[in-house]
Amino acid sequence: MGCIGCSCATGNDSSPGGCRSNGGCASGGCNRHNTYDWISATGIRDNHPFDVVEVNFKNGSRKEFFKNPAHARAMTGDWVLVESASGGYDVGKISLSGELVRVQMKRKRTRSDAKQMAVIRKAHERDLERLDELRQQERDIMIRARAIARTLDLNMKVGDVEFQGDGRKCTFYYTADGRVDFRELIRHYAREFKVKIEMRQIGARQESARIGGLGNCGRELCCSTWLSEFKSVNTAAARYQNLAINQTKLSGMCGRLKCCLNYELDTYIDALEDFPDRAERLKTSAGMAVLMKTDVFKRLMYYTYAEDRGKFFPLHVDQVWEALDMLKSGEIPASLDDILAMAPPSDEPEEEEPDFESVDNVIQLPIEKRKKKRKKKKKGRADQSLASAVEKADREDRTRPLQNRGDQRPGSRTQRPQQRPENRQEGAPDNRPKRSDQAPAQPPKIGGVPGDKPANGGNNRGRDKRRFTKGKGPKNNG
Image (cartoon, rainbow, N blue to C red):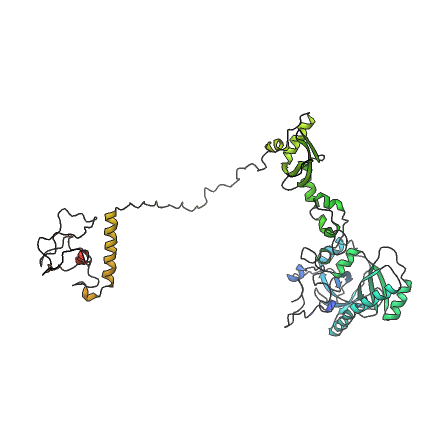
């Protein structure tokens, strides 16, 4: 895959198929100072367009403004040939056009009426192939240039090399601590590379921006992606944020202090306004207390005794202010525990009444009515045994074949009267369990003769009474 934000095509082997500006993503990333021309993307046409375009070279490492004549018909995203101040032509890509260029020129303090080079024409395939060949030679030339500078004992480092689009000029970007006399070096370079040589000194931050890379945060460098103005960074920014003064951790890829130390500095300064200035030591009756660290956003100050530093006491800022007021009035706190017992004011904001508009005329959903759950009555042991017997009988009745169920028919609600069983003795006691929900006034008849109605009014719903006496009636002795 291509780099993050890469707009070039991707081949079948998941490798970048474009990036003509740097030889196929050979160095750095494809996300250098990218700009998005949203006006051109939306298709908005201007009757009087701004005749200046922004062209970037070597994948955004360098950007300049050029006049865009009407005959060129160049738009955002086109590769173009532009005039060079040293003679010849250069090849670049238009990154912005229209009114956004006017905003960029104002931001970079470039006058629109200043004399500028113009766009010659759109680049064709041969121009881009020539540019690819030059970009592939830059790495080898940079290595050779460093070796030549080392042989001349020059205190300098060649960081990047950039060829002009026509191959007539080569620019060497170098870093050095002081002034370097490179007159002899230019003669060696001209004899070795046989091109016009231009030496340009840059700073360490500009060098990192041109080379690119990943920071310890896991993202591409800010100076290489979006940061164009470098502000001075000092160790005071680290002290305000309670960071350890460790040069290794605070330094970036360029060897200087990280630019991101300034990102949250204003927030820390605003939060530190509520903290006391001279509160490094607190005098107590138990001993002198020393400030060890400060949690800015939790508004806590951690103190410990100077003689015994085994325990830390997290004091709120308001508690520290009260202790300082006591010391000014001549009172000495007994210990840090007493200061810690002082109740700080609540930081919770007061609840304000919501300012809602009148909703009288607005249709509201009805309140959902919840059904009350009925409590199940506890059944006695006799009822539980009866219910279990009924459930067991129902299961046996469902599994019994149809021909063994007497005269029942599927779907019938009534039952034919049963015959008196022959194997039952007359006068035998009825040991069948009674259902509690029927509660008959008189004991039902056992069995019955043909034509008699059942004891429950004939509503047995297909149930066979013989299942209640299974295994419980007297044995057949005859």
